[in-house]
Image 1 (cartoon, rainbow, N blue to C red):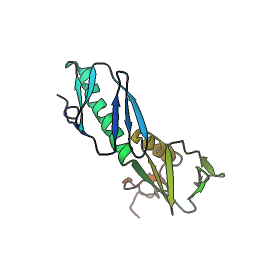
Image 2 (cartoon, rainbow, N blue to C red):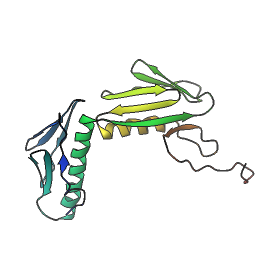
Image 3 (cartoon, rainbow, N blue to C red):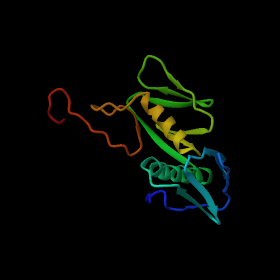
Image 4 (cartoon, rainbow, N blue to C red):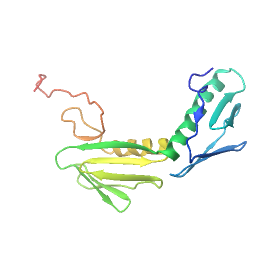
Length: 179
């Protein structure tokens, strides 16, 4: 059995799950998410838990078993609590501002970078920290990665956009000795 796949998913109060043959819908206080069902994987609701099982022990189906359970668990957590990621902007003159629903970033280029925030994602700015939040874990991670890719942190001074708590490996300068 898959270590992840065999764990039941607890359904918190206020979350409803609708299981159709082709699609699973999870609705909660923050919104609604949908996920297609994978072949040879069965999902059934038993009381306040959702059980994910598989038809046989073929390697591809075993991999889908754990994946389907993880996706459903992320959907349940997303519609009840939500997900968020924090990004830090480091560098002299590097700034970020909210411009309507878009982000206006000053990252040392000759022009300002405008990042359009997709629907379903909200951003909050506090000094030089951007908080990306939403109900879909995949979408929150994708938007945070796209913002970070605008100016990755460089290894000499650490200027750029990094995740909160990300550890950068710093290099010494030209002389080769630590400064």
